[in-house]
Amino acid sequence: MKRRNQETVEPTVAKPMNDSKNTTLVDIQSTQDERNIPIDRVGVRNVKYPMYVRERDNGPQYTHGVFTLTVDLPREFKGTHMSRFLEVLGEHNRDLSVETIPEILAKLREKLQADTAHLEVTFKLFREKAAPVTGKVGMMAYDCGFSAWGGAKDCFELILTVPVTTLCPCSKEISDFGAHNQRGYVTVRVKPNGGTLWLEDVIDMIEACGSAPLYPVLK
Image (tube, rainbow, N blue to C red; front, side, top):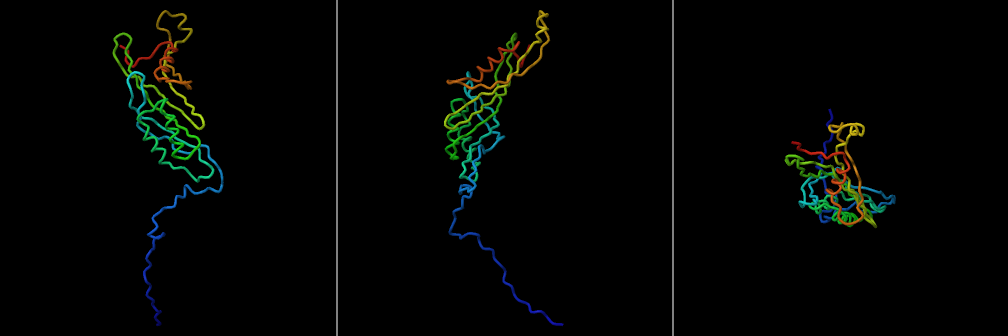
């Protein structure tokens, strides 16, 4: 029986992909994209984040919002920097209002080298309401939101959904009291023309249009 020649094989040691002296990482995301295809909106959505929103009478109210933040992607970039959206949000979440949102849009455009930026946020606004007879106080929650976009000019919308009481017109006509009623919800989108438009002002106007206001405590 013949023995095959046995050769000693030296173990292979993996070498680093790059020279250890070169510690600079290539930023592939920022390299030139030869396809030349711009994208209207890229970014993050459904981001849950603590925030403060200005109140008309009591200063800032602490709540939490669900954010969508986007910018346009120029044709020369391969992608956007997702972490920068949250950096900007973290710098401005302590004062969110009609006055401060243009600053956020400008910061997004600056940090991400974009021409346009969009911000959408939904949140709960809580208000104390006193019962009409006893004056006992309870808390009402209102679904609110801001929608803003900016480029050469900034645009802004307030979005509110307010619960109201509505009466059946026929029942109201034939009843002195106790007319048939139900709860309804009114959703509005408002574009302020200038100055400060408080969420509470819009809520008051909507509630005044209902047949009767709702109270969290009715005793």
